[in-house]
Image (cartoon, rainbow, N blue to C red; front, top):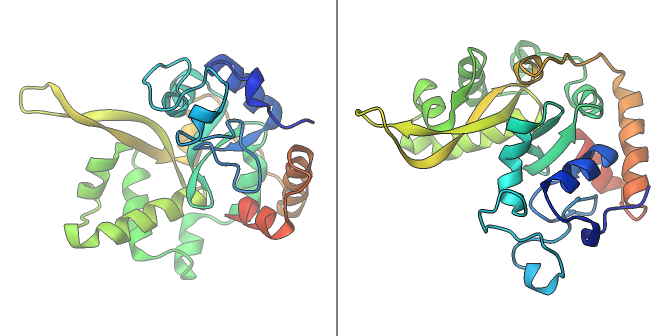
Length: 236
């Protein structure tokens, strides 16, 4: 399989087609030594001959808009903080392999009891387990103070990387008059809830076999990927 060339990527539809063919991708326009469907970021776009332009607000050609479009318009693509503590995409076909490699068959309680997840992660996960919740509400419901902002952010990323929670959309705050205001706030749900709401369940896969499958696909997409980077990419 050949890696994506941005000259063939003209719009959101092209992006989804290429992503489904590849199975996964870094977000943000940086391959990070692995692979990205969009292989240039907003700082490089003036040097790239492409209709794709970051941060224009055009839903068809602005990759920043696509991260939410896939969540609302595609039932087979997940987007979250998935790789190297930053954004990425995984399709339904490949998600069970990453899920198996990272979770190793464990659930949250098992990981928490063994000290692999801390109290901040527990507080967040307990709230998200009750259903979809906006970021600003999550912090309040999990009783994080301003002094705990860094703990909250670290735990939020950790839970996404370990595939316990994932992004599922965005919303805005409501004022006393019932009108929306302010910046959009990311919505979170459990990984299982995310796929169930889209009519899918994740099959059980062997962790070692899953690692091998993902590694082989990475090398199809990027033959020069280094093993150490591959390990970090797969295991999180």
